[in-house]
Length: 415
Image (cartoon, rainbow, N blue to C red):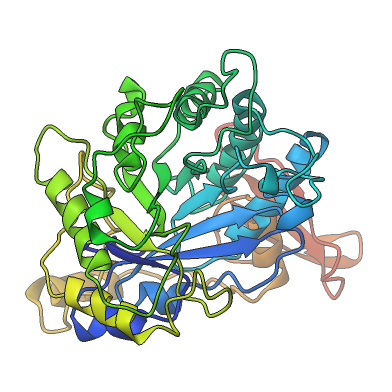
């Protein structure tokens, strides 16, 4: 598994890596993928090998297909996610779906109308299946599986106990429902924006209108989410996977210091020891496309980001991240006295040859019979010649020349 980066700087979509690396500040890259059917390679090792932390968002699809499928297909979706992860390289953080309180992310919606409402209870059912399927994969038991970030300020998903469509309540209810499903999230994802490109909006304390007067109107909506994190998740890693100036200005090709102010705000938050730290702030988005969102075609915004990268905004962890796996053991140099003595002692013994290309060995490994305890030996049955070999958990044998029909018997007790 790759190491996590040391800096909070992040970008949604690959492509901006030279900006990070020129400042010697490799950070986080968010990649959004579709798993039904898979729409791209799951090899992220190119990013990881450069020191980036890769956060992969797993989507059923986009638009009317829904970020999650219909609830009747949750089990199938979980296996599709697991298949994508199984073939992956270089990633260890997986987010399940996107802004599931938004009607534009519902399966079966038509331009934000209709479709299956993804309540916290329904989302948690899906999350639990996906998380379990990923954790069962060899080498992925320690991966971090993270619930979807809700859409801030969107009040279009209502359900019993949340008649106003409160997005912060949705966030809290979703996390608690995942915990209740015995699928405790390994991390937390959130989105935060400003309504306009004024950098003063980053630290603004302006609040929303009724009935949401307790919540921030601009960037500090992230603080509303942080305050709602359940107690049992107060040490979980936190990733802000989308941030940008939104309606009405969106990204403009102007360097007004918005990007610098955003990263400073998160660094200042992390500097307070009592605060649950945020490990990543990822700008939305690098990819050229909708001009409201894209950064790669705006040199002034890129310059703002490059200026932010000059700061030493380090990641702080509430608890230490899992360590990287230990390096494989290395042989002693041939000149080491221990190696010389071990080899001399071994040469005095009669070594048992092991034919790893032989039919008996391959059959024994396929049946999990352990390792050979004898060399191959010959015996006869009537007039037919056979070859046999003893393994930890059985005696393997085959008629000479009939190598495709190897058989075995259990070893007698005490043998």
